[in-house]
Image (cartoon, rainbow, N blue to C red; front, side, top):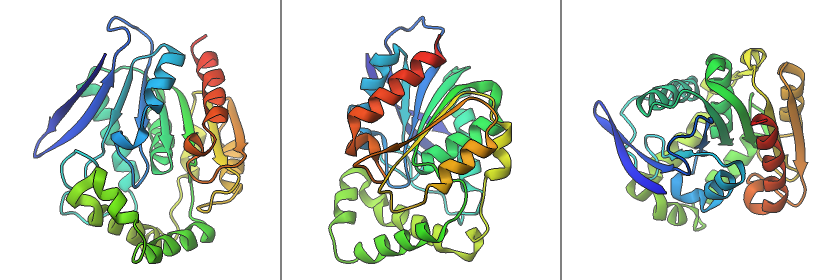
Length: 260
């Protein structure tokens, strides 16, 4: 059963999608955290596919400012906004009575997953990280600049408007201004990684324009729990779309080991 609804938080609301295979299940809930341009609808049927493989209930949601959730608040984005999103994830889990979860995060969503896993290790039984970033790289900043300039002439923003409506320009502006600002010049979450205690699966596309292999190397060095890393061939920043078969195989094996 799939149910779409809104959850109210003070002066804003969050759009969520719950996929329930067994309402009496005691297994962790599989929670999906989208990237900086993403939302629930942009996952396609991928959450349903992993839910069936793992025989898990799942939660997908739009962060504030994305998809069908409320607009961003008026506050300027700080270097700790991903930390704030990790804290909000716990609030949402508590509101939905989710004691334990396995996180699947993409890009910014993968970074939020790492922060949440480090700050609240007792709440998570696994992290699946697609194209995570843990520190600023010049390659990534150059890719952001290139995307910003191309968006002035291509159809990117028009395609995003199908999912985000009138929030599109604001979310795109916040994305490129944050990553190119002096404020984030020394941004890193590497010191937090040692606090992660659950198993981790981390992978990236071999042609990812937004970072280098050092992102995976850092995870392998700093995370002391069991970690599996992989390069996905014929893939860039969204391997689950560019090489879905390989990603599904990796996730299937990982979920099996987490749930043994």
